[in-house]
Image 1 (cartoon, one colour):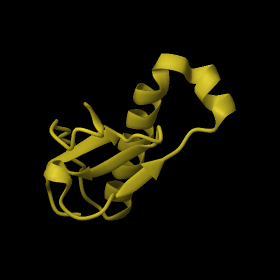
Image 2 (tube, rainbow, N blue to C red):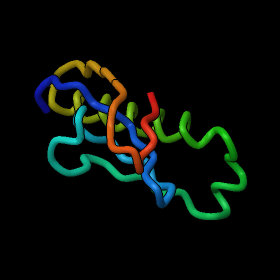
Image 3 (cartoon, rainbow, N blue to C red):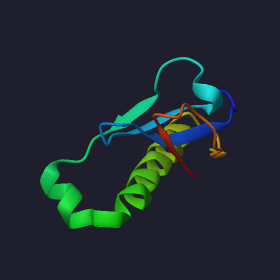
Length: 84
């Protein structure tokens, strides 16, 4: 994946979405926690989703023989909640 700014957004249904900054194109990754997981993780859901996304990007970069640079930024629609 070419270097680009990415954002993690919590959308109205509670899913976390990784997308290009500004919402250009569709989501790159969707993470949905089950009801049981949501209760267990409580306020840590963002940190867990972020760690999952970072691990996936780093693993993909290693498989491709490169380094992963992650830049998460804010900014999106009113219905969505941007998380860094």
